[in-house]
Image 1: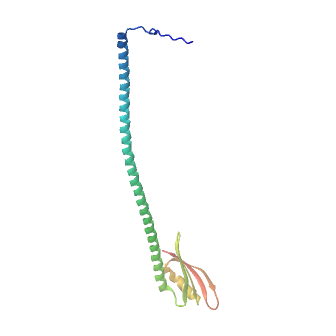
Image 2: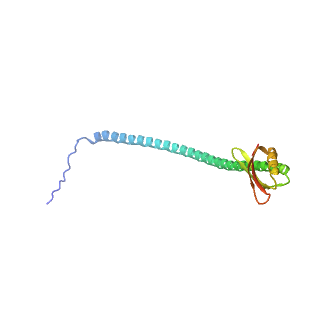
Image 3: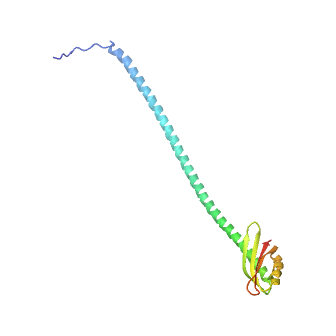
Length: 178
């Protein structure tokens, strides 16, 4: 069988009810004030963090806009650079064509009657030069052309003469362009 004690236990600290109110209520009030201040401080910190977060958002948007502008600038500068390189290549090609045109114009005035040119090549390395290949019925016309090549450039050099069938001579001359 179980026993149940119906007599109330005596309080641990035997105080009157009025004294308990004088002690407990201020303690409860202090606890409420403490947690209220902590809540207020936490709320203030949270508001500060929200302000900082909003400022960071604005800065990030400004940085994104700046990066977008820089990327746009880089794309435009890349397009301008490509266009410049194209124009530069066109300029060098035009310059080369003008040089070749001048060479052809000068050659038309210095080629002797008994000689014909079979190939002309232009090289543009450390020293620009023209190689002239041709054929003639006599060697004197070849040497006359070699002498006349001083009009085209400097240091005309006879690379070789070969006798082919009959009285036909093939030759190769190299001239440095001024």
